[in-house]
Length: 472
Image (cartoon, rainbow, N blue to C red; front, side):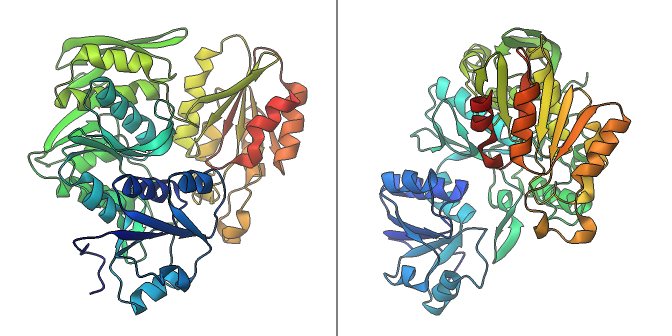
């Protein structure tokens, strides 16, 4: 019987359609490690994911083709990038094969029998979930995890441990062509963290109200005995939690919150902070990750770890040794005194907080912010005005023309030139660039020793980081 709800017993062979995505690739490797025979297919089969999968023993077909299913796998996992007219999606229905979505497979094969710890929210999911996974590992709890970034401490974005917990980054993106609800709605977490609720993913959500309805559903779906740790300075979260009778702890900086940061300062190279729990000092902590937003990410992870019985001493040791996530304030290199940093920031809130975080760690030079609007949301004019307030703490701002603007209807396209004009009106030194080459030329010519170049994009940005380091 064809089904996207029932995963048959005695599964031996599994095929993943769109296997080269971050999450699908991780799932393929997990399934392989669990002993299943795994194949996959994708339109874009190239390194590093293609070589990584092959090294794991996952056979990958180049391109989507009905023939890829000729061997009749016991189960087909359909990625959320797959449309219903994909030749393999059409064929699996014709052949009446069992199929499911990625979160359904993750629940069945990885989460079953363990307690899920889920980090969700518009911002900070990857960093917070990676901090929590590292705390559990340092505590000797041998966690499993699947996270949307490469954790430098593990050199990967997934792990299969023998312990009783699995840490998940709770993605609000849709599940599959046959299931348009958000991925995180498939999980009932033992402990959940809610970092923030803002409008994002304009290709999935209509407006902020649509986003809030989805998070409301998530909170309502949580079992009453489970625990929610929610940020305390977000009006949207306040609204969502009103009248809820789930076990809720608030974290942040409000006096009445169960978890709060009472004191914080930069003690180079450390980001130092003191945590209070229910009005009493819980402990002092320090980490190499910069910024107030990362202190809040750490606070949320500490509150979740405390729920699992992990001591403040172990949490402190974990923060001191935590290496971070690739593309989250990652120093890519230093050349002639100029530091080049890579960051995933693309939402205006994330851009603003990232610049604010980096600033005090490089007091001797200028901060050159380089921004590429690339997401389906940032290439639209939704945040056109908000972006003009995101770069206030930068000394020089370089804005690239969106690289995939033809994907967006003409009447709702973001304008990089307008943003530059708005920044100049605020007397910020800003410039528009039509392509990546012109940015590299400009920065290489103007950067001086002591400066930091902060590159922000959710894409590869034409390998700007390495090329810039060569030019410097």
